[in-house]
Image (tube, rainbow, N blue to C red; front, side, top):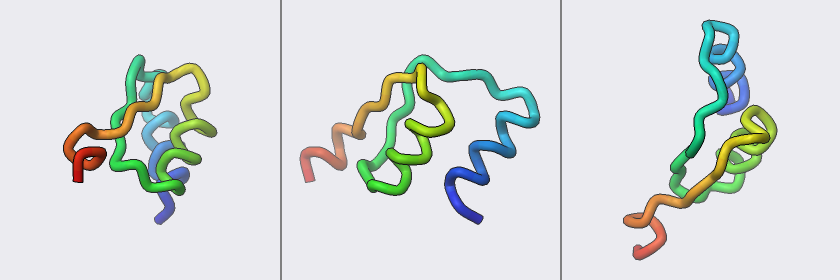
Length: 51
């Protein structure tokens, strides 16, 4: 299961666009977030950024 499929499944069950999405910075996750939630702000987790 891809991240994009997971997000699309959640949207089909009624998930709206979140205001903020926090991720670990993986390129595939960021691409899926920007594709599925174009109006949401994407932020990298501070713990992952510091590492």
